[in-house]
Length: 76
Ligand SMILES: [Ca+2]
Image 1 (cartoon, rainbow, N blue to C red):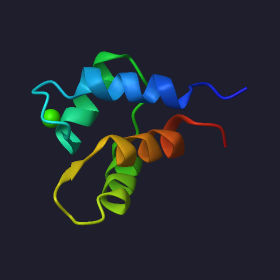
Image 2 (image 1 turned 30 degrees about the vertical axis):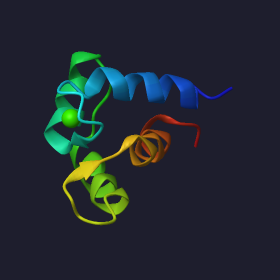
Image 3 (image 1 turned 90 degrees about the horizontal axis):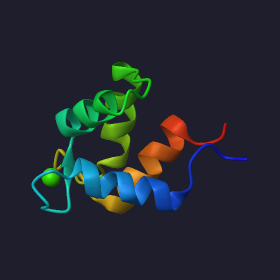
Image 4 (image 1 turned 90 degrees about the vertical axis):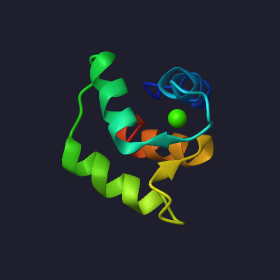
């Protein structure tokens, strides 16, 4: 059983996107994860953030976020 479903990740995005512009920055991600008491490896988070931020906008949209969360918190 995976720890989280895609739906859960999508709901988390809505919570983490505090200013509701449908995109999320690395600092927003890290502070959100910490606020949820989730284990955060900043180096890993930064590395995968850069990987999924394909246009280097410094923001992830919800689809990119789900991919990031799957890598960081999904099943191995
Ligand atoms: Ca945002």
